[in-house]
Length: 351
Image (cartoon, helix red, strand yellow):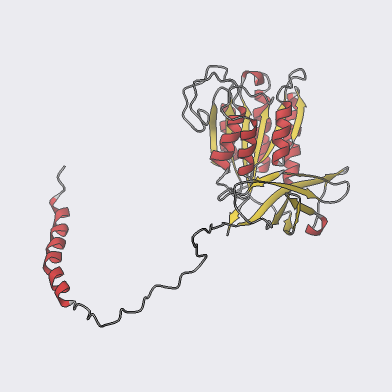
């Protein structure tokens, strides 16, 4: 397609001027004398580390954030100070720089099991989940909603509107059909596959952590409502835990299942304990769902944030084990460690 004539005129004029003036400018420049020393360089002095042959540039981990809750026989504990707690990384004592109980902005991912096993409790799950988000979400917070069955679907993206979240929640429905031919990411699992699928719980955790929460800051929470059974995921339990840890996400599980069907119970215990969350077992009584959400809400209100600069500053991508204690008789609930990676959410901020 030909360009309109008015657009060609400036181009022709520019070429004419360059052709006319360029030779004159070049002729006006005198060649430097061979005896004249070269002018001093105006480049600024090089700053920062200089690499010599055989050396490696090391990137440092600047700050590690550990969100935790503390309780004793009487309930959650308020008013802890940094001198009340001791923190170890890979069995080496660390100095806690800050310990606060401030209300840090919250990002919540609700993962709703919509497989056939949840058919009779899904209406109660949707109702109690909507009430929870309405009570917890403030204008500074955000939430998203994922359903998982033979597929993983994003029902609501990041929003601070409880009304939008409720609308999306009500659209969740039981799906026992064969999986659709999905593409990588939410909506078809993390990887294309021709394998038969059942309940893609681990894939849902991976996608919520890696695709949604990894780039977020502040407190990051995943709440799973499920019987814990996984069938057909491309990611295994270890991969789901690792994704949550790299995103610095705390995972809670509201475990709703027939007492005779507990095949996923152990996996959910591992998932929650390794990430600093916990499992709340409501059995097969859907009426206890609201109480379970209330327990999570109370815990979020009393959460602490401990920050420290690790003695080992190399961002080598390895897993670092973290242990936190706050006195005798105090049960501390915190993640078991973090990956020292560049761009790993809040765990490893680079200098």
